[in-house]
Structure formats: C-alpha cells, structure tokens
Image 1 (cartoon, rainbow, N blue to C red):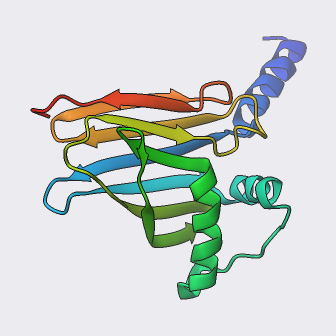
Image 2: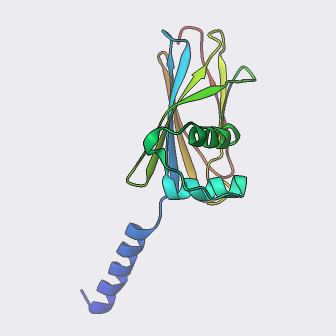
Length: 167
C-alpha cells in the first residue's frame, strides 16, 4: 500500500471513530402487576445539557449525586416537553424514580400510570431533534407479549403502537 493511500485510510478511519453519535435510547415496559409503565431513558449528558439550554434558555450545573428534588423537577419539566406517552389520546403523567450520571451517560428512570383498557399508545421523543439533523431516538416498547422497536428522527418525532387485547 502506498503512503498516500494509507494516509487516506487513516483519515477515514479516524473520522469514523471520532464522529459523534447522536442517539438516545428509551425503553418502555408495561407492568401488569402494578398497572404502570416503567421507562428508562439514556442520553449523553453533554447533549442533554445543550438541548436543555435550547429549551429553557438556562445552562444549569446539575449535581445528581444527592438525589436533589429541585433537580428532579427541572429534569421532569424538560421531559414533559420532550418525551410524551399517550394512551388512547390521554397524556400519561410520570414520576421520576431515579437519575444516574455515569461516564457522560445520563439515565433517567420513570414510571407512567396507565389505564389498563388502553390499546393505542403514542410516544413522542423529540430530544435533540432540534439540534442534530442526524438524531436517532430509539424506542423499545413492550406490553405483554407485544414488543416493537422504532427509530425516531428529527423529521419523525412520534410513533403509534397498537396493542391487541390479548397482548
């Protein structure tokens, strides 16, 4: 291999390795025992801060180490705008049950109360969609035997899951 080709390959390899990934992961599981959805959201913390600042106009210095109620409220208010779960056109309220920041990855655990007779669930996830045109917001939705994964983007910010009664 010639030195020029090696340099080109090295540049391409480094570009691929160093190119930032714009992705979030939202897992939503229905617990029939409790009648709630347990949700877990993962997002890179530096991206979260950028999106939070864009939405609120404020750049906070969060400290999640002491389970601060004020910081939970700020994150909750942000998520009420960015992540919405509806059941048969009724917005489900959530409670944050945990927040963890580790290695630039923010994990937020939530619990949504549900109406057990619902069969249509719409999930909106617009986290980072106003910042990155290549944003991917991945969702894994589980309800009984039903499981489906979807990719939301800056153009497609919501998806409807239709559950059959026997799921």
